[in-house]
Length: 282
Ligand code: GRG
Image 1: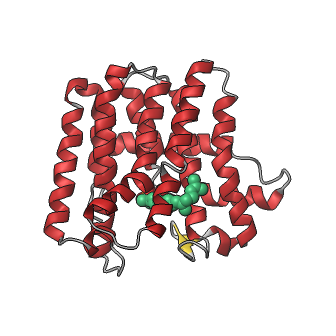
Image 2 (image 1 turned 120 degrees about the vertical axis):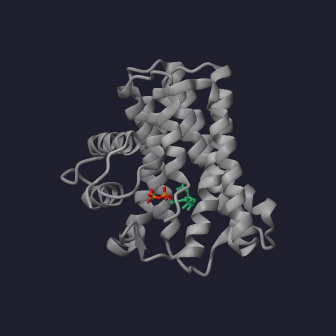
Image 3 (image 1 turned 30 degrees about the vertical axis):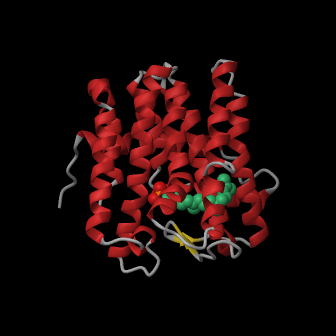
């Protein structure tokens, strides 16, 4: 079958290639020491992943005419943090997974100590890149650093992961809370980062945050639905409710997300494309 190009797939493809090039540029060379660490950082980041978070950075930023060069930095930052969390998530002390993104997980391809250090380096690299970016105002850099730290730390992604371990009894409410932190926080952070790099006002940020919160949760519930359809034993949301209610929840969150964009006109189309992309049944 021929590839059918739509404005949506075109956009996703274009920005995906763009961020792949920039990620390559920001990663340390495998020919500089420490070699094994640098090789492993490149192994986990390059040639893999949907790049959903960077795509959200671009889409949010472009809604407000943010310069692509500024968005590049933000896009790389969120993908590095995402990759660091995947590496740590796969470690034996966490999920103990041998495979990730269609290849051996970092600690299986390299070793556990290297994987821990890769996660550490990929978590700190974004802060270094942003802090050193002279094309952005100091105030903008500070705002970006604050958003990223909140999204990834103990009240964000790390907090969500910890809560998942700590909470023995889960119900829909607590599971949604975990999802909002573990997955939602960085999705929201990506959208905020793109918007900050485009100098949005507080009034413009408000509907964007509604969009981000709703689509972030919809994405994670859809992921649980896809796991269940793929017959996996652990399927988060679907362990607590039936398929119909889960699908209904995704639908209403998706509609809430789209409604939040109503005031932004056609400029927000990339965000609409990504909202569709995030709730696809695989
Ligand atoms: C080191 C910052 C840091 C965190 C450590 C392990 C941990 C704490 C948190 C786990 C966070 C985690 C793995 C959340 C799951 C997020 C998720 C839905 C991953 C899959 O995202 P996709 O579908 O994956 O966007 P690709 O591979 O396409 O990028």
